[in-house]
Amino acid sequence: MVSPAAAASRQYVAQRFDAAIRVTPGGDLEVRETVTFDFQAGTFEKVWREIPGRRTDGLEILDATMDDVPVTQGRGPGHVVLSGRQRTRVEWQFTPVGPSTHTFGLKYRVRRVVFTDERGDVVAWRALPTEHGYRIASSLVTLDLPDAHATTPLVERRGVGAATIAVDDRSVVVRASEIARNGWIAIETVLPSRRIVAVQPEWRQREIAAASLGPRWAAGAAAMAMAGILIVVGVRRHYDRPLVVETESMAVAMPEHLPPALAGALLSRGRVQVGHALATLVDLANRGVLLVRELPKPFGTRQYELAQVPGRHELLPHEEAALTIAFAGDGDEVNLSKARGRLVRNARRFAAAAEADLLARGLIDPGRRAIRDRLLAIGIVFMMTGAIAVIPLAMLVDRFGPWPLLLPLGLVIAAFAGIIGSASTTALSNDGVVRAARWRGFRRYLKSALADRQVHEPGALAARDLPLALALGLGSQYSRYLTRHPGALPPWFAAADAHDGGMAWAAFIGTTSHGAGGAGAGAGGAAGGGGSGAG
Image (cartoon, rainbow, N blue to C red; front, side):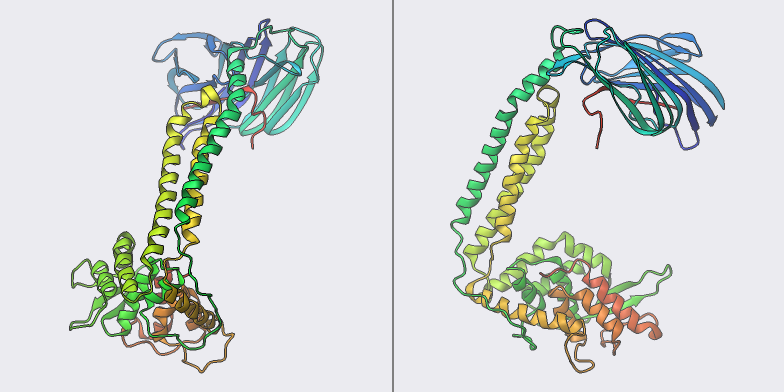
């Protein structure tokens, strides 16, 4: 009858939690619950029980007691407060007490719980609350029936250490012990048809009506998904598929001199990612535009600082964008983590500059890019619409069951069609497709070399290769390679401790590679349950 929302300083258990359930002609249940709490530590001033109204035609509280003394409805010590509609909450309020033992009683009538199906008249009730943060030492649950021809009851339990079940002509008795937090017992039995109820309860009629409408909701969801997919297919039909055949083979030499961000974008089908911006910063350091210094680590975490080298430098638009974003248009030093955060927040700005450079080199096909972006936009719109639609449709669940939620599912299916369609298209021109295949071959070689599967001279993989490794999604492999094969530090990198330079350098690579991308419920049909607690 109680589930604790007790503060951490409060400790308590239930010595007993008993429930006596009587089935009345007409299908109502009269329930009397008795719980004895052992308040072990802390101060307590209330106890509560929440009873769900699901699968019932309503609930009426008949009386409540504390230590066998009736309590009346009202507020303040010695009273009980009733609230809630979907879940009726009963709260006992009393003068604050410390460690002690108290017994709380509750009697209530649940209207029209018994229903009829093809088996007969079904009685299903969850006798203990499903939400209680305290343990229950023992429990006695009795179910009294008005008819002697019930089938063998089904008793489900969760979190119950031991239990015995006794059945006679008109009753079911369950004795349980060592019930864990949120443990429960549910009883279901069936009597001959129309022995208890002649007409289905209102909640059951609504349930049957909702189930009959299920195929219509499903058809609507299917139609919605199909319409969305047809929109995606219609847009995809305008996609000009590359006419060239991509041939890929391992290439031991860099295919061409290309900025790392643009090479990475080729491998990503023309998509520019945050990792490409980080690779650009490292490339600028290689070219003498930036310096990297490791900061003292007072708490054991390595931190790095970026500083611009004064002077005039020839930069491409996407390189200028990376610098401007990372340093926020200022010339002061910036922490690497802060610079990365700025690049993440301004990813679209950098991507636009990089795509402009790709377009200027003839590596992007504007028509293919437009189709790709349109498909992605369609997928995002469908996904957001489906997510928003869940909110109003969830309000219909009580009336129609879960069926209305199929509609946003149809939108989500259409959204995935758009997103997959976008991912399967390339924004690259025919020339870009050919050159991307060469870069994939070089990536295969570089990945193999970093794993020591290729024979190469010591020092052949040096700091100058780091920007490409980052842009091609091999930053982590490069960091592990340098841990195995430490070498000279690049002139633009300064470690906080000269004796720890190799580890600082490898850790820096690992840091810059973060974000760098290249390529049950049993008895679900029973009423009852709910929660309870003390505080």
